[in-house]
Image 1 (tube, one colour):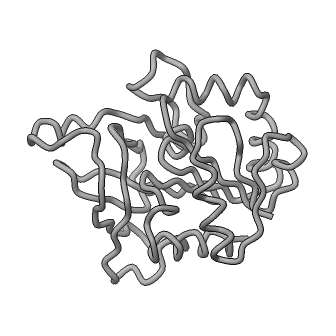
Image 2 (cartoon, helix red, strand yellow):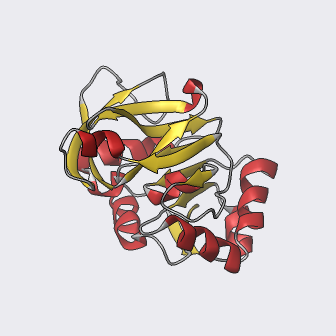
Length: 205
């Protein structure tokens, strides 16, 4: 069962609809038992970094998530803000620490602003695999995904970067650290390529 973490900060309905369309069983939950028993976890996110981390902590979800991911080895996929929460910190916030599961920090899209591009980055963009990765099959095929964001993750180690895109500069738009994965774009809004990514994630063991 794929469990979508419900902490009041994600567009869970669209994710559920996409998973239903793919014939994948899913459940939206904020219960520790469900998180610990999940075969796969999705951490969605729309909104502000500090508020999201505060919500996860106020709902006592951090420990169950860590038990699932680190004790049971449950694959997890962070989406948009959910990806940023996997890192250590964000310039968007006022110092609230992230989960710290990936050695990375989230910074503003300053490069895009300096190039005169609109921030937030909204719309379709091409994504390029940075390494062999089970989420991005057929890496030679050009893929486009839907983005809505003003910040992006900067990884300490290049090995954690799964994919990049161009928006004023080359930015990391997907990470993979063992069985911990994140995407800055919205696969649930990205039609066939988004469906393919979610299908690949569901097949991870």
